[in-house]
Image (tube, rainbow, N blue to C red; front, side):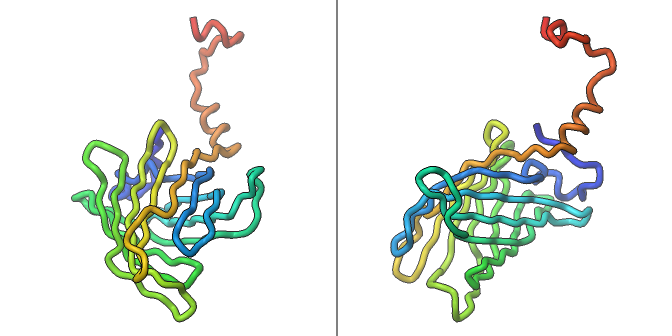
Length: 191
């Protein structure tokens, strides 16, 4: 279920499907880097202004699904205009800053993005750009990222399947929204 908070900036309504905290797992595979399964936690938040704040933490998982060590951390700000064009400023823990542009697909909660500018510190590894696809599918958030370096052509390198994290506050809010005339036994409600 997609909820649109009453204090969400009106320009951000097309991105409301991203709001909240998400957790899940995915696969990382790029030449010259360790191939691994990873866990991920992502948060999209807002404070009433015309952008979403984005934070993502990933970590390597062992064969039993346990956290081994951090993989990547990203943070940034997402905006969308009246023509459903999306722009993102993103910073990565490895010393890369990116500007992403893309758009929301018509009639779908799906975003196609491509890097427009990449800046790297001296400590950052080789990286020349990327593409990403985010989609809201059956109440889950799925994404795939592509990456290019001077030595490697653009190719998929990470993808994940994330589930919405439900908080006790969410449950309390939903419970308060239930109608007062609910049947006591719960079974009659489904008859």
